[in-house]
Structures are given as C-alpha cells and as structure tokens.
Length: 247
Image (tube, rainbow, N blue to C red):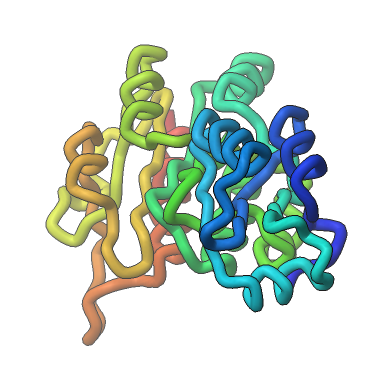
C-alpha cells in the first residue's frame, strides 16, 4: 500500500499533475468511465506513454483511501527522474567517458535498489529504466539502494532500443550479459560504455541484445546456471571498472 502523499485523487488534480512537472507513474480509471474529463486525461496519458489501468469501483476505493475519487486516481513518483542528457553532461563535467546502466524490464524493487547502489559505488553516471513493464523508484527501491538513489541519476525511457541507438550516435558501446556470450575478461569494455542487464526471468530481450556490441558471459563453476540479476550486474560492472582503471 502506498503513502497518501504519493497518490493524486480526482479528475482536476490528476489532469493538473499530467500537465505539470509532476512525475506520474500510473493512472487508475473506473471501468466504463468515458466522459469528457476522463477522455482528456487519457489523451494526456497517451502523449506521455503512461500506463492506464481500468479497474472496478471496489479497487479504486481501495487505492484512493476514500470514495470521492471521481473515477480516477494516479500514482506519482516521490523521486524526480533525470534525463539521459543530464547523465551525459555529468560525465562530461567530470572529464570521464560515459558509463551507464540500462535495465531491461527489472521488476523486483530489491534488485533495482541493489543495482542503483552498485551504479553509485562503481562510478556510473546514471541508470536508465523502462517506462513500462518495469519497477520505478518506490520506497522499497530507495531502502534497498541504501541511500544511493539520492546521489544517482535515474532516467525513465519509453523505448530502450531507441535510447541505445541514440547513445550509439554519441559514441557509446554496449555490452549485455548472457550465458552464451564471450568471457567477460576477453571483451574490451573500456571507453564510453553502457551495461545492459535483463529481467530476472527472461534476461535481455532479443531485440535489445541485437543492439549490443558485446555479449559477455560471467564464469561460473557451481551447480546452478545463473546469478541473481543484481549480482550479475555488479560482477560485470566491476569488470568494466577494472578495465577503465587499468586503461
């Protein structure tokens, strides 16, 4: 259950939030409600590629803590997201090659928090997450990051593959993790680089993997065949750090 401070209730309030700098994460609308104000909210949500759920009255009552919701409730982020450009600017200001994490559909808030913590400690300039099909910055993520969220830039993007293409134009290279990849020690991971980590169950999606310049594998000798997503992220991130320091 969310804190009341992270919820906006009512048509006018939700619409104003959509038109302001407030970061809206998800909208819940009463199933069957299609009048003028709701249509306007839906148009604004579509412009911003925001997820919208049509739910029954009982569910909306539960989300809103009260019944005067006028058929619409929105979740808002307690965290103000950054832009990818701000991450690149941060690297430039430090005189460093950009080093970014790109997370492909991470759904577990504990994993996301751990990855943000790793990003901060290994000197990455930011973490890019997907707008849909992935967890955003929640109170659980903040706690799992051990405070790193306050010092690490996190951006949300609608299309991860398009973001990779755009960053390639900026001179960045990309590496993703997969069991059938080249041993990570044999990959040249220096220079401007983006580390792509896939979801807990599916890994990196096929199209995103095809966008990557390197597919790296982590040596494993145990009896099971995979690492937790955040652990794999940490292992690869510090191989990048090792190579950057060695350079």
